[in-house]
Image (cartoon, rainbow, N blue to C red; front, side):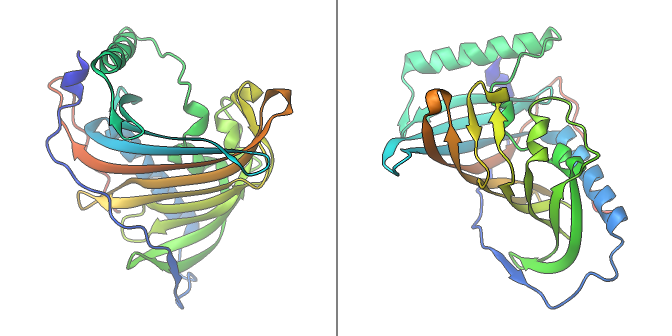
Length: 281
């Protein structure tokens, strides 16, 4: 199967604006919190199963400063993204606002086609970005949620929770251990029972790739938002993080990363079985 078949798009959508929460005077006394969270987890599991049906674009901005605050590096990269066999397939299409050269584009296509052949052969090559991706299904099982309350978000009613690591959660790998280091707030759309926004901080140091790359220091700040698409499914629109890090030889630095997700579309591959969208209970 070629990457061109995987990137066949039928419908395109643009991401919307991203306003913040507003407080609501209503309370959450009548909520059955355990049942609500169980349904949110179930919906997220369903969403993970239908990710293969979507394609979108990511605009990533990376700004790195030294320990004195002087900017040392700034770059943007644009990716076209799909999922295949539940694996994220990223094709770099532009750097710093400039399209790739024909040679660079050819190498990207060869890299992705090699990955697809490996997946078709039953192999699962290591994902170098795994430690830097938020996986909602894992997050929803790794945290303890408290203090439910009703709020307004983009004109919709949401249930907001505080969260912190659940001591009973056992990470399956080094990537999952990230969820033992975070605490913050989560907003769940009350009608659709899907996550709308996360805001959290790193409460203890986290070693990316077990420390092989660098260490994130406590106090790192993260924000992650989703928007309602196709009248029923919530998909990412923006993520942002700022952290202080320490690499080898005690090099200290600060990173500010932003990802804007846009151009969502559904696509069909002849051999792919479509999975129904999650619906509120």
